[in-house]
Figure 1 (cartoon, rainbow, N blue to C red):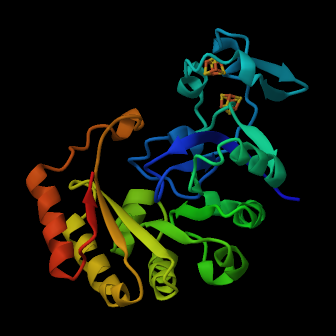
Figure 2: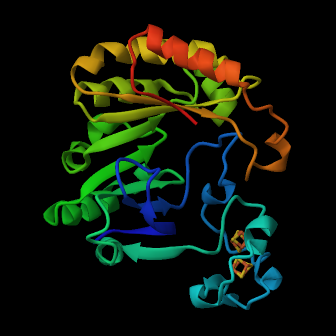
Length: 280
Ligand code: SF4
Ligand code: SF4
């Protein structure tokens, strides 16, 4: 049985896929997005112990060089996250697929499905597959929210039990994608077409940061490339305005796009054939 490092579980979410869903955020990411709103989800804890003394609730302790988190004592003050220099958090719970499924079951019958997010949840493909298999047995929907960095072609067993993927396309141009994330986007773009061809691309998402990359070029190219697949199934294009909440202070000076710029992005997607466009 597989397990994963779980950052948090939101029992009921209406913004992580269709309907009311349990959203599960896994720890660790292989991108380094400048505008990441949850930078503490990027890395695994290296047990440096810097956070232990700043916890006002004695929820953290050092046991044989490993930081131990007592969830029942935590008052969610975020002191530990603020002091961590490693893009990590000590508030992680390692759970098996069975334990995770049992947690999900606490929310049945009030949820329509489950969404894995992160961090980057596809770093735990076997764990997700095991949870999804159990979810399918009780009729729950299964979605993945991903940065598209693993080649989905190699994970057909995961896709078999996954209803759809919400895929970030942070920038269309390869070098701009590196500027935004530190990583190239060849696999991301390949995944977009592969998933769309299977009818499993539920949504693509682009965060608009006008100073960081040419958002017009990204929305134009992404919508042009994916438009032919709209015949297979609907694809939502979620165009997200950059907001500085939670962003690391060295990247907080970017300006949010204007309403005109957001509307311009929508018009570009419409011109290329998209009709299900959400601006947030
Ligand atoms: S969460 Fe961060 S500060 Fe705390 S022990 Fe781990 S690496 Fe160090
Ligand atoms: S968020 Fe919880 S674990 Fe972290 S410092 Fe505050 S009380 Fe301690």
